[in-house]
Image 1: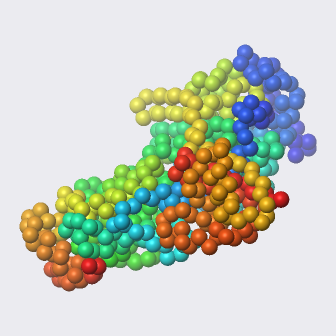
Image 2 (image 1 turned 180 degrees about the horizontal axis):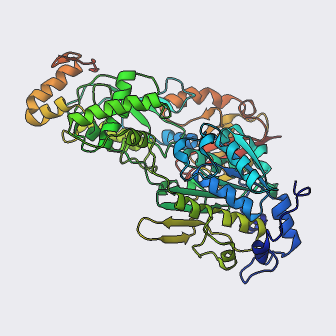
Length: 442
Length: 178
């Protein structure tokens, strides 16, 4: 695609300062010159997840840095409230898919860049899809989507295939706070490793909501948590449906009046039920890397706070400077504070931790024999293992009812329950988390 | 592109291909198989293949709710343990911390939930509500007021409600098992 298009004069003047010669801290493997430029501009394929607040910034930065084959996934459509910071969208675009509009805008504005949009969920795509990229950058707003993406990329790592290891750069912002991190699946700590660092979503004690509301938020929570299920039964609350929000707003307003509480508004109602924290354009810009000049990459070392997603993508793709190891946080609530540290990998992480074992057994082996084998194995020291596959439970030691339900499997052949190369998850109280077995038959 | 693979070799990481089982699923399997419940609590799985939806029956052997069997439904979503399990009482019971719709006021089910907590902690917490009902954080305000103002009347109401009688015009479910 780069072949029919010639970049304009001087386009890469600044970036080439970095790529034409090694800096004091460049990786010894860095080869300055045309090779690295060719990789960046003609070979590197990069995936951006999310085309919202962070996504818009990330897409623009990548395109201007010289990445030319960019893919973007987003399942949302453009809302009028996005326009203040999601600068790739205009009023006429409201209602259209974010991914498509963002891709068109970038391609029009930065000639020579190919942006391929996908309007849908990350879960729609399979391993082969994710395998085609060199790098993945996430600018997401949900914990669930991040956990899925992280687990998918960790699972993708095939010990036989170096290409299967895809660096993941994850950016996130929340009001004036932000974070950027580099995850090298199975090597550095992963997203799941840091799950307990997350702020829990604001939740009010249900008794306060029910009896002693003091804040407008209490009234809104009352409407959504207690009133909705009581009045509407099993009907699911759709926080994107204006009619549903309207119902909650009316219910919350009435309750607020009853308790002399002021401040229940439509937008607060929407904010509380969707757990919205106002997004701030400048935070998005810092985290995505806009305000970082490329020149600083030369002096960036592991502990330098100047680190943000696109900066990291550039450094990882070119090895022109040391990349972030591995967690950068920004707090802009009182002045500007940033800190970089190495978040440690957790041995008991359910996604990247635990042990993995290749096990070759006879196809005549029963589940009971497999369990005996595991218990006897000196190197894993396991007691009372429970076994499952991604789709079924093979044998659970407890609770009694499940033990009974899975007991008939003990005499079955493992090969009837687990396909060749199939995976078995083993948990036991003696294991910090779990052990995964990859079973082959002889 | 940086050469990540060489770092991996140096780390002498064994083959670490992980299964497709979701983290929530693994965690639930671990939580369930390591439940350490007293004889007063029992789980029931309507569909033994579905570990994410089940009920817990609590039969307190002391306190004012002794003799009753209280059934709670557990619904765990794929975002567990980031999200707490959703727990509701399936019966209409007279309890200061459980409302007539079955909502439960237990701090670790909402504002104090943390991923380090487990299903076992939630279950123990629920049982505690029957041993020590808490009138300071009421969900059933009438019951809580009665409990702090007139303990004898409250005990009487608990007894009647457990027999399936009505208390102050509200019909309760019979939960007595012995």
